[in-house]
Length: 180
Length: 156
Image 1 (cartoon, helix red, strand yellow):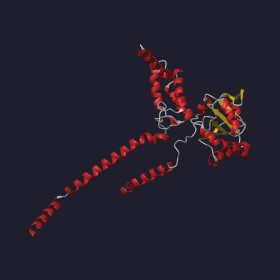
Image 2 (cartoon, helix red, strand yellow):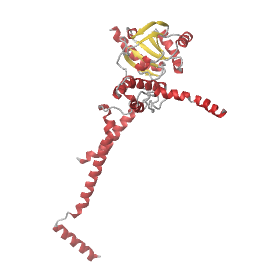
Image 3 (cartoon, chains in turn brown, red):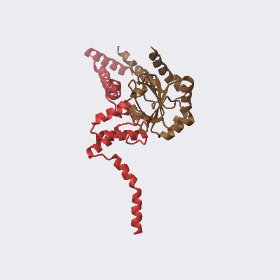
Image 4 (spheres, rainbow over the protein chains, first blue to last red):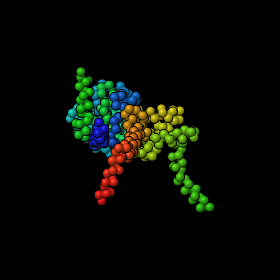
């Protein structure tokens, strides 16, 4: 009977091994959004293209969308921009932009020069909506469902791999629910 | 004269430092103390091994400003931490809350120490028992041992 206890160290080592193995390859800098499965926090900000038009949470509702946080000061945003343009133009993906801690002039010039994949952009010069949403480094890309609820967050550049493996499955899952 | 003037000019250079100080200054020393404590306890989500007090990241600056604003608005420490956790997740707490998910973290080390102590005690007990074992002979056995030893002596 007592001999069973001799296996305790083996069991401990196996449990520890499984735990540590599960951690391999996990990027600790990628955090799940604290706003996951919650609506985008309340905001009232102007549209980037039109300083007279106010936008609020209602503007985000109606259709599943990617919600892309960007700024002209952010080099990685420039890296991912062509891919966003391709997503919008070739696959008709609905993308809403959050122009984060930026200036209107340079931001509009950027869209003119590099192409505009966005349905519209929310102009957030103080980063207040970004802060409430828990944005900690642009670029970040969220999937919002048709009710404006956060369903996924990706921190960092969106490329084909990220789109195919992470964003697209969530996007399509909520698209399918929308049709039902 | 010139030296004094020069000194005054040089001091002007230090003015930005003063303004830096003022942005962090709170209305009373107690709040100032809580500010220092809170910003050391909250973790920067971008530069993950720094508290928001240490970090130069823009997001850490935003978080410090928010803590400052909430302190002035009279919120409690717990309310302030909650507000940041709601935005950035449990991750920003340097000392995680005690929940079933963090039990292993909080109590694991103590459990391991207890297990270790138990093993040491058990081994100690077993060791003592095995030392005492040879003494547990009854009178007949002892007489036989004596006889055997004597025989052994004679044969040599």
